[in-house]
Image (cartoon, rainbow over all chains, first blue to last red; front, top):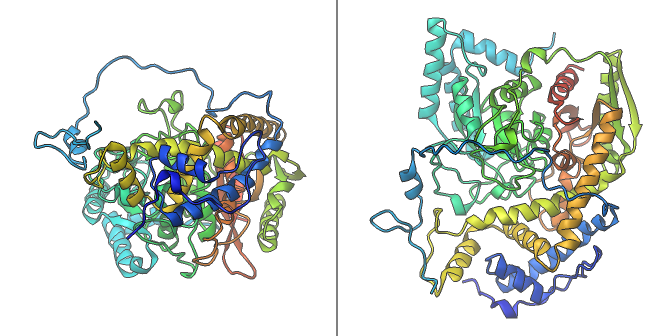
Length: 119
Length: 474
């Protein structure tokens, strides 16, 4: 059985820190735990150790990005230049809503999706 | 006289009929796919219906659609209504697509016969098709080796002769690298040429559908079929359906080809030798074809740019997989967050988790300026440098991957080694420009295929396909 690790007790990665681009810092145990939490991922002790090492190794490799002199350039989110395209506001009914409802993990008899209690 | 595999196939359809050919493919799959692992699902009933329709047209003398009865497999990240859309993940193992992708609808409308869905690395996270949660795919040319990825199932299906061609998806080289590893052809069109409606989005500013096929002719046939405007996808606005097939053998006489020195940095010697041999052969065979080495300094940053942005978009795209709307059932938990985290922990494989974590990290408030924003600036620089290069050269040539297909199990411990397989394919995805791969021959020592990559400027897809077709003949 996999042992779950509480967010605040993830073991520290032992690899060297990735810190080249600007003020970026190494992913330490605390940062990894916080990142896992916002990613909605649980990590076992073994996973936390492995991912901690991997992530620092990968970021160290990716840190060459800091060498690019691109501060004067725009932020390129999309490679295709186009203005926002608005189509006519004509509703079109989707013909297979039952097909979508049937995929819900859990549902009421009436077809609505069930979710865990949040309050 | 060169006759491509696709030209032969089209002749066979007329002489033998589509149904007879389909049965041949189904028999081959039955015989060999248990060890190759190319397919996730095979659709004999649907394929027989499609084939019967083609035969009926042939019998009555009605003209066939653009695909003329060719048998096509579809990467399992593309929706086919009524069939499983797993993306190679336990998260979607039992998910059935409620509608078909626009590209799939166009294939069916143009008399393509859809035979099944092909395996891939989980959510396309990988370069060797070993990371599918459903099955592992082997290279048909040497089953101890990988077929490349993430479209490894498609590559294996083409190389094993399980179909005529495939519809696949390329985010950072997922069509071209596996095509190179099995000696096939693969093509990533200009971003926005093909509708992405109905594909599972991985990195929305990079994803593009395209063919992984035996040759340039079938690549052109598929692009002609699936390209053009689709009101479901704004990136296709203003895009016209292409008409490449009949222009494929009309390559312009004068072509300036640039070969970036950086493409060969860190490249296997045998790969480099073969690629140069193919480039020289093109030059010798065509009077107006000139080649020139040049430098493209930003190329070395394309992999960091690609992974930083692709991880960021990927972590965002993965947020919807929460175990509520899709397949895997959540169990009673103390709260919603706990239930979602438990499902994602059980359903996602290690590479998917690694990319989600990295994407979340580089886009988090504290670190986004240092990583994500920096990569967005760098992508601008790379795109401009690419545009400048294409002002000087009509086509850029080089290897598709710096190595041949590696042995199963290799490159698993160090993620950087796996990511480096994409080092030569990601520039075209970062710039959104078209790029294809054709076989340059067999590596002298490894006896495995090597790919020649052919890139052209934004919107110049036809020239890329024409040079691919010319390269096949020399």
